[in-house]
Amino acid sequence: MDYTALASIAIDKLKYSYTPYSGFNVAAALLTEDGKVYFGVNIENAAYTPSNCAERTAFFKAVSEGERHFKAIAVAGCRKSHLETREYKEQSRLPALCPPCGVCRQVMREFCDPETFDVVLVSGKDDYRVMKLKELLPESFGPEFVID
Ligand code: THU
Image (cartoon, rainbow, N blue to C red):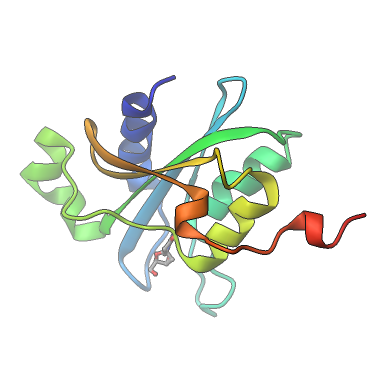
């Protein structure tokens, strides 16, 4: 699966976000080393703090299915109201990139090599910026600090 296809999945899943509080939808498509895709969306909560980001939903779905080796994650985000525009419906265009929050970057760090894992920031099906996890989370703390 190439990153155009991965970006396309993230854009298409934005409608599944549960965002009655922020109205900001995020979707992520996580690609395993052997080519499987797990997608996730943000899921909010009336008590606010139990809310979960799209990236972590995707990781936790995959890890809980036994996956441990990941190649890339595509992330797309926009205000829910944007999903009703012609720009989105006809061209799959998003107004801006949606960089992952710090907590999600740390979750990626738990399971991915920061030197090789690609974070695909999506603004359209053929329009995205690829960054290494190391660029988004420099000088990071990870499992090798803790485990012998
Ligand atoms: N959000 C994500 O799902 N991923 C991110 O990396 C940034 C923020 C969600 C959390 C909340 O539901 C909404 O976007 C607004 O912050």
